[in-house]
Amino acid sequence: MRKIKAILFDFGGVLAEEGFSIGLQALAREQSLPVDDMTEEGMRAVYDSGFVLGKGSESDFWSLLRERTGLRGDDDELHARLFDGFIMRPWMISLVDELRSQGYITGILSDQTDWLDRLDARFGFGQHFDHIYNSYCMGKGKRDPTHFNDVAEDLGLEPASILLVDDSRINVDTALATGMQVIQYTNREEFEDSLGKLLILHKNTGSTN
Image (cartoon, rainbow, N blue to C red; front, side, top):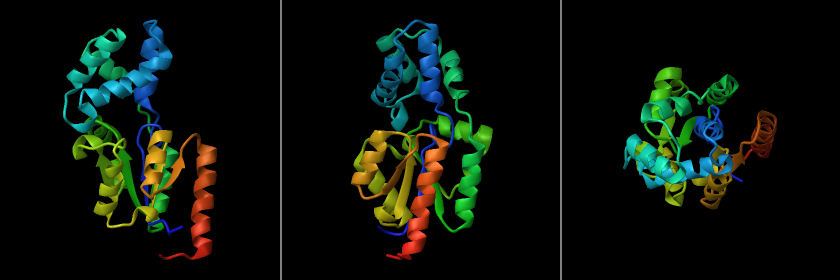
């Protein structure tokens, strides 16, 4: 196991509450639509419309989602409901600052739209990270294994020296298959325990490979 040199964090569901799924599920309940299906339909639509990869517009996304699910509301109304659900976790930002002060490279690796820039303008989280990798700007997302290789190449690191923290099992499995080290975020307590054990393990082994 190689020494960790960089730690990359997903945005929604890790650094912040997952406004996308929280907002969609709330809308589904209010409009008597299938709640369990709405998040998955939203993920399909944000990819199929090209919005998450910077190849389609937000209007394309909402039009496709309304067509597939029966969701009601104009673009601005729906945008506000989801956007406002991304609430930062201050303790995560404090942790990022601590890790950065210890010499770790820190970054965001997110399948996000241009909303990430707007959220940064609202919360100012970008200054806490050395790198921000956003699918909207890169034209690739975490569903594509080569995306992780591209990020590792940009960092100038072997994948094995990069730790990804992500709440998606699929993303974690894909990153692991490319050689990265991973933690699937489920809650604060388990995450802090996993991170502490992993970083202590590397410190005790003294690995520099």
